[in-house]
Image 1 (cartoon, rainbow, N blue to C red):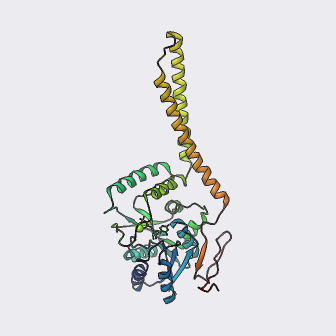
Image 2: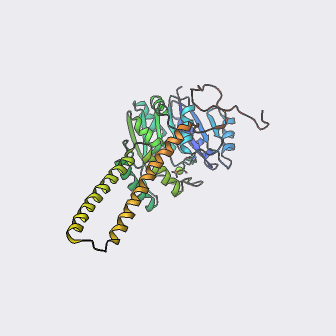
Image 3: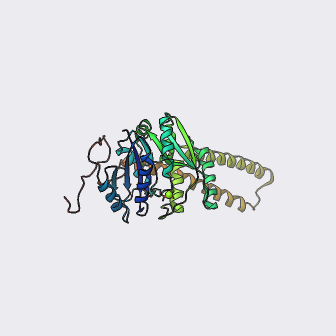
Length: 328
Ligand code: UDP
Ligand code: MG
């Protein structure tokens, strides 16, 4: 039987591990595929890893990778994609917000020949403020970046082997998967589903984390923000040249009049603001270049039960040998 892998990033999800495992197994009972569940424990501080280990002791269907510290969900997804062995992969959160009942539909899309079968949620039940922010953000980002990003479309999707290879061939360190998956293109099918609210545990996304994630999305995909600075700068420069010329003519004709404080202050503040903004944007890009040039691995593995069947390619992070509690 062909194997389909499921990548499940988990950070402090102890209440959810057993449940998501059971639900996924339940779905696969009715499918002509074997399942390989790969949990990525992002250095949880609760008993998430113990829960996963208990499952993996019970069945070889459960594999895990545990990070040496919290590297974030993007790194977890990358680790997952690099270590799966199935023919296709489904990416889903561990908090059951990505409902496992959609698995058969995702696989059906794969059988129809699609390389990406994407689950798209609506925003039912979310707070109005978050809804408004998100919809404004997606309007903005689609104007600014080259790839198409859709509201409600996240990482919950099935990728064919080809799509996985394509996603892995983009080897940037600071990843924005949503955008990368859109960038690789290929045949795509969308499945709509009703938003599910989290029942156990808490979201790991604070407002500031979301803001940073949003900024990553804009900055990872092109240099348009730099260009916007350039155009704004040029526009302001033109305006000030015209203004100076007009003032000069006025002075020649009428002589100098003292008032002008308001104009000067406005000009200084406006230009100062624009300069700071532009510097900020440039700084962001330089920061990114700095991080990329260091070529640090995107994550480090503390512990895993994946022993065989994994090929290590150049530049892939190494797996540390499994240690048991005695350190052997
Ligand atoms: N997650 C992770 N590392 C982190 C934060 C989150 O692996 O640093 C996992 C988390 O366990 C969950 C998924 O990423 O499975 C999505 O996180 P969350 O539910 O907090 O995000 P939300 O659904 O609120 O966007
Ligand atoms: Mg969630």
